[in-house]
Image 1 (cartoon, rainbow, N blue to C red):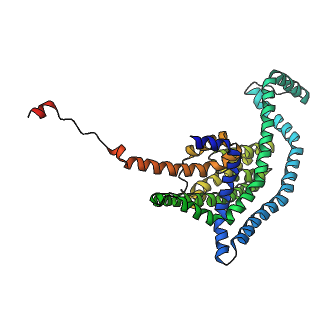
Image 2: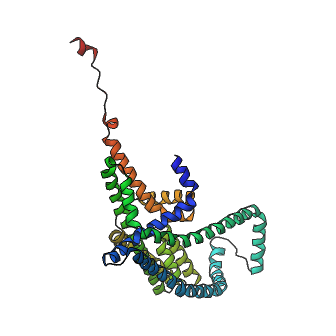
Length: 349
């Protein structure tokens, strides 16, 4: 109990450290490959981390201007698209739902002003949440700078730290701990590398599919959907909502909306039948409901970074729990059955 309380109190340090451990864990095979070819481990770790950082910076340098241009163009077209959508939707809303849309932007502003005055307390709470959300963003940015540094140090001493940990385990528990460590190693290794590759493939497929259909902001929506694919239903649902919204705003007939939905469903089917089973596999062993519950708990305790840690941490906890259940079921405490008392007539006989 004390350990859990201490972990919660130090979550600001432990979460970036655990993320750095996952990064080092994913990159350790590459460093081992260089080390096997007579490259010093320190130099290999620097080369691998430097290559990853350079690739990330290259994506930012090339991608950010493109995304800014796309969002700027989409923003400039948004008022005309909303007005066109209003013109198309007004007859349906008036004749079918008996709802009158505001005729002018002035009337709309008047309605918004009335709503703002009636909901001032909720808005104040929203400002409070937004303030702390900004602080969280700052903390995430600081963590993003610290994580690569932690990961570099862990990569350099990865094998030595593992040997030190093994040496500290009491000899009578060494076989059990080594067996659990191998299972965790297989699970985490399969998940971290497999999920990263699957997310990149899905981001490319979603972006290509929406680009073929001709959806505005196809690449940002595809990338966002693919990167959030590790959250069951959430990434796909958010991507579908954004893509269909853009299809309605840039209305070119119901065919465009149908093709948009179809492209998203096709990629989702490819993910479920090919990408996830073949690349990620069943190494984590968590059901979707378990993933969602783990993410909710991790987000409550550790914030946004906790969501990133939820699946691997949940997988490790499930391994430990399953081992504990096996030990419990094999224990004398569980298997002991009290002897039956003989009945009085049996004693008399």
